[in-house]
Image (cartoon, rainbow, N blue to C red; front, top):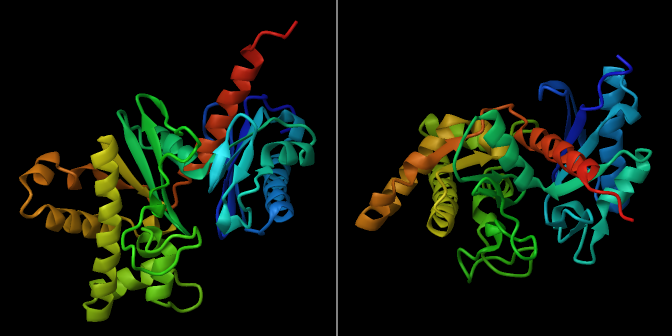
Length: 321
């Protein structure tokens, strides 16, 4: 397959536990997928990302030079212009910042690399895969909690790249200390990590799947954990709607693999929270919630699309004289 058109691109979702990559052809069809465990620290992140891209290309018989671009979605604050990442605490990257895009490009022999916030690329991917129009928030429920925002047809990154970092809005200012330095942050209650702590599951069984299954079977303790978690997620959804009035709130991340039972639990909590408030009821927040279908790689697909678009824009720029 060497000689495949140069509109092919690779997309990476670099999370706290795994690096998931896909190879996208010129018609936006996924042609390959590779997953490896995350390695913390700058060298670990770059090494794992490069390994995924190299394996994707090898399995497709595609030389690295045949890629139009590589896109990477990462947690934390990202400067898309420079590819610098900071405050990605789940990756072992602190506030000093790491120029991830140039480092990965060099490791891959000069292939153009674009780095974006992981929830931003997930929002792009969700809009494309689910064919959603209108303002959208992708609420990622993984190791942490944050949202990617598509507003007015484009990504809303914010002044310093921190738009959508709602996981660090304190839900309980007297709660446990968060790695960010605050107390009681939303992600301490609405993340996959929170479920791991609240409902330890057998090896190989995701805590979210285990607790939702136990709750469906009538286990009172599991019902309490599920409803407390769903209530925290509902608070995040309500925050997104009240601040941005998005038409769609798409639940993504590892916990979203639970699927429709998660949506039902969150909608029930939103309806409960709207009791006694004609204003909240008038917004119809529960009806705006849906979930990424299990197994759908919206983040790496969005990263590949974003990188390809950035590469096209770079080619269209006039030469400096």
